Length: 124
Image 1 (tube, rainbow, N blue to C red):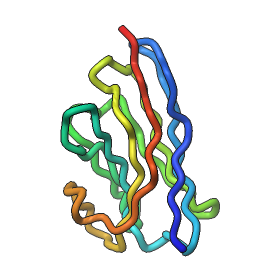
Image 2 (cartoon, helix red, strand yellow; image 1 turned 45 degrees about the horizontal axis):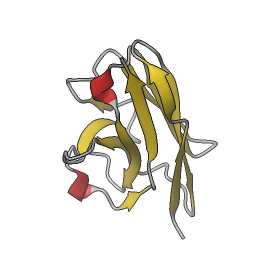
Image 3 (cartoon, rainbow, N blue to C red; image 1 turned 45 degrees about the vertical axis):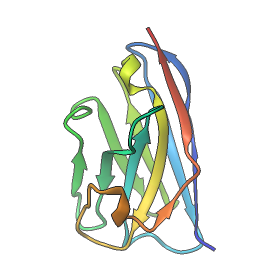
């Protein structure tokens, strides 16, 4: 049974930071691209960042480039997302996802496994 479990969300003031974590279990995700998506109320789920298992290849959405950082611990089977310089428009449920691919897809439909999400709320 493959499971992705997110944690680390919460309420933070604008300009603040959080560290989101995704713990993967059920298999070794060393050959998977691990991604983060977010979905705000009334909006579609959107790509945030992803890490390919090939080398140190990462990709970010333009809106978070420079303020969010994705990292992976292959021993612990976790992927983290450090989010900083948060803005109210970053408020959303953040989801962890995985797909067995070295190519990083931006489309949510390409990912096979999903976590339940963790809420991030940024107050102004």
